[in-house]
Length: 250
Image (cartoon, rainbow, N blue to C red; front, side, top):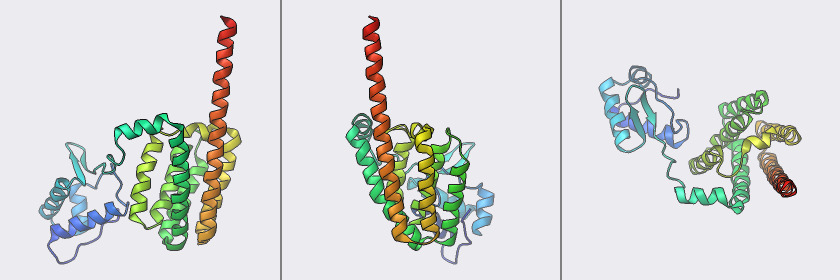
C-alpha cells in the first residue's frame, strides 16, 4: 500500500490530504478497501484517534464509505458520471457504440503517448505485468485483463482528469453498455491480432517512444472497431437466416 509517514502539521489534516491525493491520482480505486485501522495507523505513523478523525472527515466529504463488519472503502465516486437515462440511450443506439470507440482511440492514444514520456519505471513495470496477465488469460477472463492493461496505461499517463474520465468509460464497458467485449475476445480470428497489437503498444511504451505508442493504440482501436462491425454484421445475417427458417417452417 502506498501510504507514507505524515509530517509535522495537524495529523488528521495530513492524513486527509494524503488519502485525497491517492484517490485523485487513481492509486486508491473506487470500491477498494483501506487497510485495517491499526495497520493503517502504523503505516502512516499516526495515532488511531487522529486516523479516525481523518477517516470521518473523508466519509463526510463522500470520498470514503464505512461498511459495518467489512471496513472502510473508497466510495464509488464515479457512479454519477453518466445518468441512468443517458446510459440507456448508449445501450440502444449503435451510433454511441462507434462514437465510444472513436473517443477511446483519441484519449487512449494520448494516454499511451504520455505514459511513454512521463511514466515512471514502476508505472512501466505495472503495464508489463498487466500484459503478462493478459497473455495468460483464457477467453472468459481476457476482456477483464484487457481492461486492466488499458487502465494501467491510463494510470501511467499522470493526468488525473484523463484517468478518471476514462475509468468512468471503462465502467460502462465492463457493464456491457456498448457491446459484448467477451464476444470479441472469443473469436479465434481476432484474439491473436488483438494480442499482437497489445504487445506492440507495450513495446512502444517500454521503449519510451511516445509517437510509436500513440500510433500503436490508434491502430489497435481502428482494428477493434472493424472487428465489432464484422461481429454486428454476422449477428444481423444470422438473425435474417433464422427468420427465413421460421418463415419456411410456417
